[in-house]
Amino acid sequence: MVSTIGSDAITGPFSRLVVPFRVVRYFSVATSLGPSWFVTKLFIVASALAPGTTLERLPLDEMARKSTAIVRATVVGTSGILRGADVYTLYQIEIVENWKGAGKPHLEQVAVPGGAAGGLRQMVPGAPSLHLGEEYVMFLWTSRSGLTQLIGLTQGLFNVQRRRTGDAAAMRAAAAELMLDASGHAVKDEAVSMKLSDLKARVTRALAGEK
Image 1 (cartoon, helix red, strand yellow):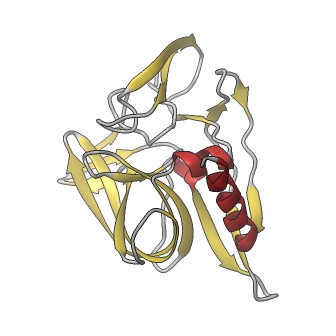
Image 2: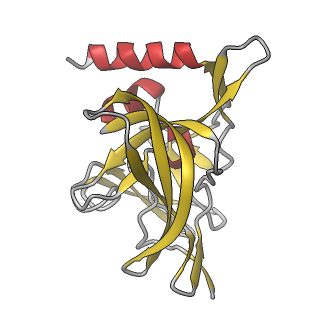
Image 3: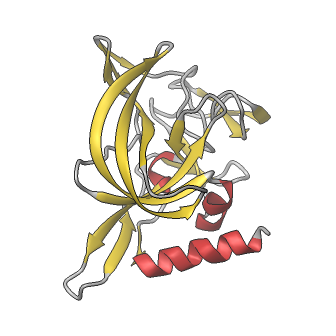
């Protein structure tokens, strides 16, 4: 059975919640029940959107401050789980380095909406797919229920690649989904590519600024 997660699904922390209809409801969120449920602001906008996901554009510094953890990690396993009526793909990661969040490097789990579990398959436009053996920088948010997710779906995930020069780069492609700024205006996302050391320095400066 194949289904598409609709308006009652959690699409990720600090992302806009979108329903596949002409009327789009989206939220500015910060939650204890789940990343899309504790609503601080509710806007209803008319749109002729096709079914899909709409994301709030999150500047890097804002993602760093709102994350409960930022890690550099390698994907070592994957499985599917059901939480209520929603399917998540659980990625087991081995943490190489903690950029934010207490604790020593250890094995962790990150949930991405969509996947297959219990005979049900759900697809969430904009949800990233992680690959076994690959290294990423992840901007994470953990709810009180203990579910850890990427902030802003693909916005909170950077692929780490080694260059021929020997240094490492952190990259993510531009999101294909509709993206809105904080005022609700449509904006175009852009691909990001920088040295891994520069990304870490940017995160460090952002975290130092919140103290």
